[in-house]
Image (tube, helix red, strand yellow):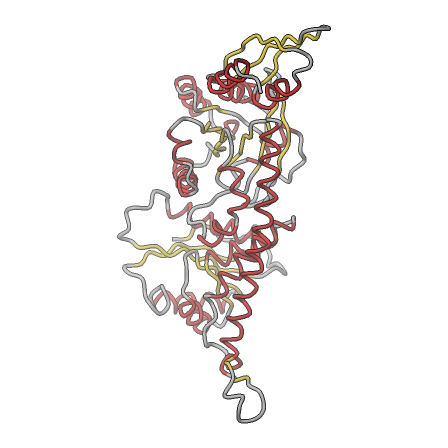
Length: 437
């Protein structure tokens, strides 16, 4: 079943075959095979590979030696030769043995889904933190790929003389060097995590609530981020156009300021090693006061993509936020819907305050989104009048750290404030005023 074939003259870029294998008997997949094939081809194009042919292959069972059946291997062998294909992307996890056997059978380079995503991340990372995280994920992946495929891995290395012994194999040395590099990278990322925690505590002292943008890759997060704060973040019609997180301040209609955080896009079957490596970045989502889940509502697989993102959020320990309504679904790209589809989305949003239809590209619905953010962050807050002495700088500082000052009037002997506080902080302030320290 062919889903995508490149048109036009051959390119100097790597000519690539994309294969999405799936079990015919698997009914658990909520996404259409055609959509999975097109997504895999899109991942390949994201790093400028020339996709000559992309195809979904239904299998009765997985084959231990090559993942796919021998008949399929032979059929693609002829295609690879005829089309002068130099790279095959298998949109599934491959064991090192399966990868080696397919490379032998097809006489070309073969990578699996994880390897492809790592290539994209390696190209997209711009900050030192992003490069550290990508390198850690790549080394963790490569460690499992070291098999006795090449003869140089069988050579012995030892010292001179009878005391040296046979030495260690090149394979063992490579594994040891990778393990050392992994530990060094983990230490560096621990430093990043500590620095990020210090920054987070500094923001809490301001205090500005953090609103994190999450979503399936290419859902329009960066375009929305740019529209809201004018950040100039790269926004392109490609998967994983941006990788490194960006944070900017945004003033809400009530006068409250927030910090808006754009994070890495999610994808189905996101490699476990990548989730672990990007834990430091994703901690911004974990510590957020509100999450905006940006969805490409015009995509036929929007619901399945929503489930994929929610699955990752729950894996990160954010199930309570999902269940408590601290996630607003931003239904992006409504400008791509026809009138009937758009009317359905608007009616759903009227009934459900968790949904906000927008078009980030056309700048539609953004005012409504900002107002919804303002309302949600202000839920449970109460504005109260407070008077303190000018000499009570400690209480004044506490109020600015824990509340939002709506109004302030200074006189010679009194500071009069109107402050928005959560019920818990209002009780703490009352206790503080009753028992000043």
